[in-house]
Image 1 (cartoon, rainbow, N blue to C red):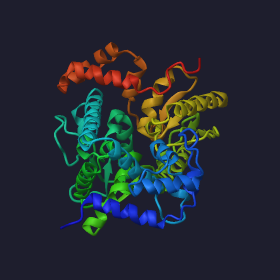
Image 2 (cartoon, rainbow, N blue to C red):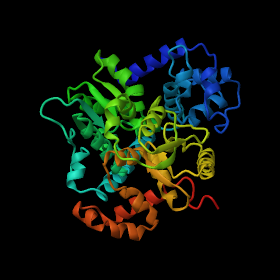
Image 3 (cartoon, rainbow, N blue to C red):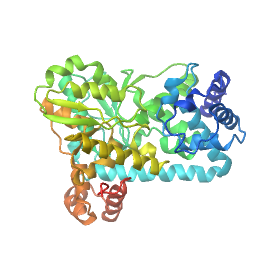
Length: 444
C-alpha cells in the first residue's frame, strides 16, 4: 500500500522533532512572541511545541506561539539544524484544531473558507476585466476549470507563472508582471485561480487530509507544462506548495516535479536584462512596505526599485513581521499598531508613495491614499511606469469610492456581461470595503 500524504507529513515532523536540539533560538527571533502572549522561556516553549506534535497537551505558551504564528520566517533562517519551525507550527495548529473540533466541522470550515475565496476572487476579477484579460491571466470567462492560458508558445514554455488565487482581486499587479516578462522575452504559461488552489484554507482549518489532495492536485497541474520551472507570485502559495506540501509529494512519488522560484527573486536575478528597459524617469521619494516571510523578496524589491531612474528609496526604520499583511490577522492590535506607526514614519519622512510588493498589502492599504499625505502603489506600478507599461489600478479606484451602490453601478456593465448575480456582487463589494484593518482617517 502506497504511503499517504498524512503519513509522509507525520514522518517529516518526526524527523524534525528528533533533529531539534531545543536551543530556543527560533522562539528568541520570533517577532510576535510578546503580542502573541508567549511568556515562557524559549526552551520551555519548544518543549511544549514538540509535545503537541507528539499529540500531547504541550503548554500554554507553546499553544499561544502556534496560534500567533504569522509566518515571518525568522525562525527558519535562525535554525542551524535543518529544522523548519514554521512548518512545525503549521502542523501544530492542525493538531490543536483536531483535538478540540470534530473532523466533520473541520472539513466544513475548510470548504466554507474556500467557497468564500472562490466567490470573492471570481467576482472581483470579473468586475474589473473583460474576457481577453481574464484569458491572459489563465481564467476562462465562464469560470470553468482550465490548465492555464496566457502567452504560452507552442511547445514547452520557459516557465509556468503561478498566480495563486487572490492576486486576481487586484489583477493589474499580475498583468504588469506578465507585461514585464513579455518585455524580457520570457515565455510562460499562466496558471492559477481557485481551480489551482494551494490548499491553504484546508490547512488553516486543520484538514490535512483534504489539504494533501488539493495541494497535490495543483502540483500535478503545475507539472503538466513539462518546463520543470514554476514562478510563484503569491508568498502564501509558495510556502504552502514549496515548503509544506512539496517535500511530502516528493517522498511519495520519488522525484520532485518542478522547481519553484518566487517571482521577485526571478526578476532580481534578471536585473541586468531589466535595467536597460527602465528608460523613463520616475521622480519619486518612496518607502517600501515590508514583510519578511519570503526570504529575499523584500531585498529583491528594494534592489529593483533602486534601479528605476529617479527613484529615491527611503528607509522608515519600522519593524516588519508576517508573510503578508493578511497573515497578521491573528494579532489585530499588533497589526494596527504596525500600520499606524509606519504611516506616521512615512508622513514624517515626506515620501511621495508607500510601495507594497504583494496583493494583500495593496488591498488593505490602498484606500488610505484618500486620507494620507502619500500615495499607495505597488512595486510594478513603478517598474511598469519606467518601462512605459501602464495598467489601471481598478481595485484601488473602486475601493476609494467607499460606497457599495457607487461601486456596483460602476461595475454593472462588466458584471452583467459576465452573468454575475447582483446580490452576490454587492456582498463581495461589502467584503472588499470591510477588508480594512486600520479604519480610514486613521491619522485623526
